[in-house]
Amino acid sequence: MNNKNSIAGLIIKELKSHPDDRGFFREVIRHTDDFFENGKFSQWSHSKMTKNVVKAWHYHHLQIDWWYVATGVVEAVFFDNREESPTYKSKVIVYMGDKEENDKASAVCIKIPQGVLHGLKVISNVANLFYITSEVYNPNDEGRFPFNSKLVGHDWGEGVITVENDRREFVPTAERKVLLT
Image (tube, rainbow, N blue to C red; front, side, top):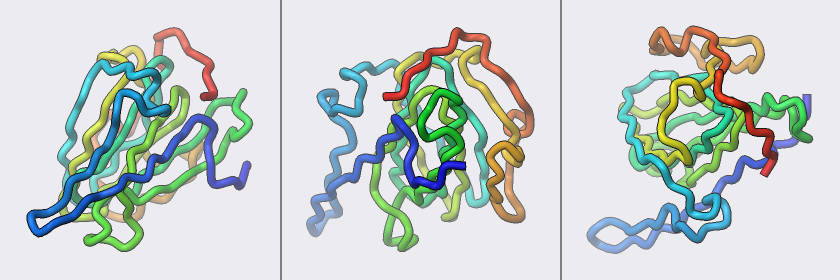
């Protein structure tokens, strides 16, 4: 197992907030950002989740994801399952979200490349994940391993909430892209 705290192609963009008496302003993504794949945008989605929800393990052959947690805190976990990758079997854990709710959390936007397994657990009472994808949702492109798969070996803790899709395995039928950027 590679012990580096990085995964090839996984990019964590630290976000800057501009607070004032009314709250703050925070820019998340510009289409000109280097990590935004030449500005390619296909879908913007929002997932509102409650405490102890676990969504894992997902990966894609075609799609790239960009995650941002607007409110609440999640433990986001990424695992490189690409045999051709120099960071094969590396795992990265990031607490995303509101630092006022959890000192470990940070305001970041994360680019998740094809082939990287990703999952999360909601740590706060509620969390709102906004994510952009490079492709329109295609069920034949979304691969899965069960949330408790020994492949990753991540302990989500007790009392987790999952759905049937996060307890099954599915290999995408979409043609696989091999990209490490």
